[in-house]
Length: 242
Ligand code: SF4
Image (cartoon, rainbow, N blue to C red; front, side, top):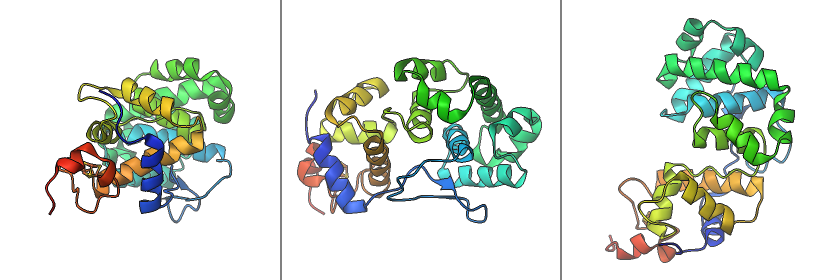
């Protein structure tokens, strides 16, 4: 099965309903922690790029609020760049990121990523320079980096055209009739890439809007009344009025 509401229309409806989300949140002022910046068009600093990569690993199986706590601990300890993360002892790093869960594993993942990235040169050049498929394969070859983490790093830290087709995307896409229940990450990603203009800023916004929508309406048990996508949604049309 494939089809349903066109992704471009869904994007327009979600943008109208929720407004631009300003992902990925990064630290602008150390007093405030990571902030969302709707409409921001500038470039990230190298520390902010590193923070996106760290956040993409820490957010695996973790609520973002707990990731923010872990980032605050890292920053308070002076670990704001890849060099200091690579140098930090694993046990200390694990203590600092405890709030994000699976903290011993994640400490290892962070160190493995930091060491690899440092060997490849400045983040902006590494993530911005290599052909996308090869770079994605390289990221996927790192311990603890799966498709969602790799694409989050590519899209939000590197500004590359890698759509993040996470569990929220799968849930929404199945309900909208974009693909079937059996679809996985790669199929959902291909579906969207084939139907959206190839534009990293657009991908960043679409993904962020889908996450927002999944939290407000398209939850595990969907709240269809009042959903901005209901007129286009197979699942929503079958749901009785509240
Ligand atoms: S109508 Fe219901 S199932 Fe469809 S997108 Fe909205 S919340 Fe999700």
